[in-house]
Length: 355
Image (tube, rainbow, N blue to C red; front, top):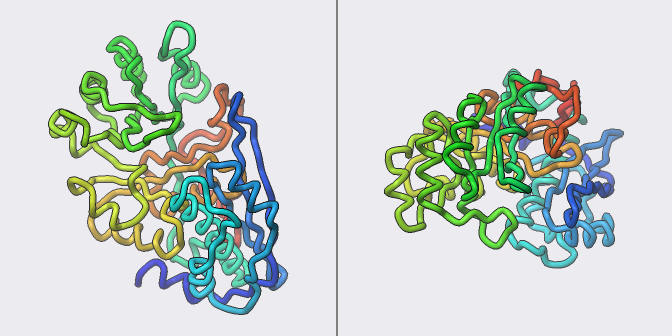
């Protein structure tokens, strides 16, 4: 049976909903905002997190308030279809369609949580899957202040968290000496070229010299999101195609099928797929076609990170999941954070991951 068919028939009663704004000052000039969706009904509450990146979109949503008429007795599948037919933005989103996908997932995940809690069961029980320990990587871009990037910050983190694995963003400032030092740690699982970001603060134009250094310097690591359209890059990386993974371009099965060659692994990011049925279909498609999956976070501030970890524990626990506990997001992670792999921590009911 298709994964979605195990969930869609769940009865769902919605009486009201509320919005909760979260925010975190990440660095000078950047304040991360998100909105938690609280769906209420039958004495239970379901939660989901809207991870739209633009603060103005959260401000508009929260200022408008809970204006949608969502109340009624239905099923999870019918409720999700109803959400898909609504415009969830009081004003047009800054980033267009991708933001609509993020917000749609927030309502779908809240509905999934509520339906499971009303049924007195958990996601893994509903799917007949046992949660597994979740391998994760710490995703970061090395600081380039002062004398340029160095391996020191990675080495310091490994002293405190010896089993920590990394997904790093290489930049043109990486020289052969730095690459050798990072490779020597044996802790780098993947390198993110950021080749599909345009007009953002993390843009990283394709540099054949850098690409070659990375591919040769990390012979066992995954190579994420190269820009194969840039001159010479496709030919340069042709011998390494079995290590190329895709993240930013993947919003649907159609995006996987449109890749220039069949992938061995892709990022099935729940919020980017934008809906429960699309996400479940993505998991099923990857399983049927022998494509490994890994999860990714969206700098969640609330329940969304735990929900992504929960899904990883059920569908891809042993891949380089970019869903480290939130404490790893800061420049200097505090002491006492969980190590990889994360022990399974599903709640007794619902779509929640404790901790």
